[in-house]
Amino acid sequence: MNDTCLEFRNLTLGYDGHAAVHHLNGAVERGSLTAVLGANGSGKSTLMKGIAGILKPLGGGCVSSARRLAYLPQLSELDRSFPARVVDLVSLGFWQQRGLFGRVTRDDKGRLSGCLDAVGLSGFEARPLDSLSGGQMQRALFARTMLQDADLILLDEPFNAVDDETMRDLLAVVAQWAGEGRTVFCVLHDHALARAHFPQALLMARKQVAWGRTEEVMTSDNLSRARSFQEAWDDTAGWCEEPRGLQRHLHGDGAGPDASVRKAAAHG
Ligand SMILES: Nc1ncnc2c1ncn2[C@@H]1O[C@H](COP(=O)(O)OP(=O)(O)O)[C@@H](O)[C@H]1O
Ligand SMILES: [Mg+2]
Image 1 (spheres, rainbow, N blue to C red):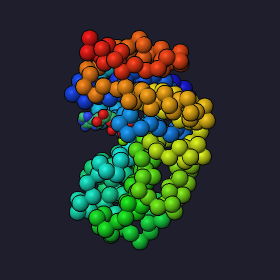
Image 2 (image 1 turned 60 degrees about the horizontal axis):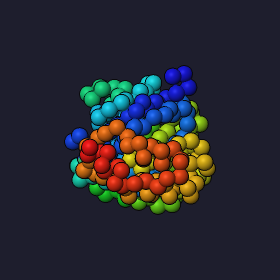
Image 3 (image 1 turned 135 degrees about the vertical axis):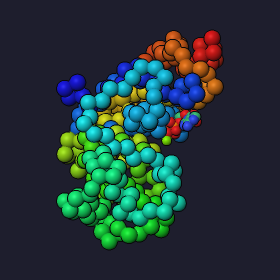
Image 4 (image 1 turned 90 degrees about the horizontal axis):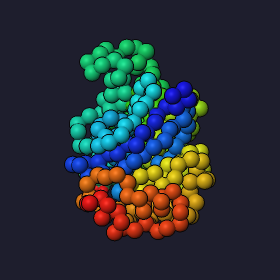
């Protein structure tokens, strides 16, 4: 795993015995910048939780050689009514280095100020979280991620519901992370953004439809295959070996995905 930061080995993830993402294989190069794309419900957040270790695999595995991992969940999964200030949220970035009750040093305080400054939130230390706009909250979460000093960074839809200026500033932070040799795996919806800022892309439809250089992944053929596969998925099926007909389809034999094949194989 010399230049590999993360490797999926036939990884299947899901809930209550039902697969949400299945049979993922491949490697993520150290220092790469990957956009994770796919329709709603295609398993992007599930994959992030699997990599972060929050969700245990139903099958296969995920191996990482990262020294430290940072995971920024979708904003919709965070409880912002919690009575805390910006400084409390951002200080959580020290947790992996200092422990939950470890002392924050003078140097740490300097780093914290530097990170707030880098995301444009100087002077916001004492602001309650519930008074922040979506963009300001995302800036604070990026400051926390910066403090974590992780070499593998997982971002789940970080640019949703943020204004253009915030998006520009946060994209600059992501580019800086890549420049520092950190590996970034980022869920996105905006195809133009992926093409402009992420050299690598993983297109999901409950499994990998295509993975590689962004311009080779984001073809109209791959996007329409992702759509039809997503429509054919049966949420109630148990997790299974991959049905043959589907496997041929996903590897490009030109045959359309067949929902009845998927369902029959899954239940049988
Ligand atoms: N906590 C959960 N319990 C049960 N099913 C879930 C849970 N979270 C997600 N799912 C299901 O897993 C599938 C993939 O969801 P998700 O990974 O959130 O997709 P995406 O992030 O691409 O929109 C969906 O069918 C969703 O309903
Ligand atoms: Mg999601």
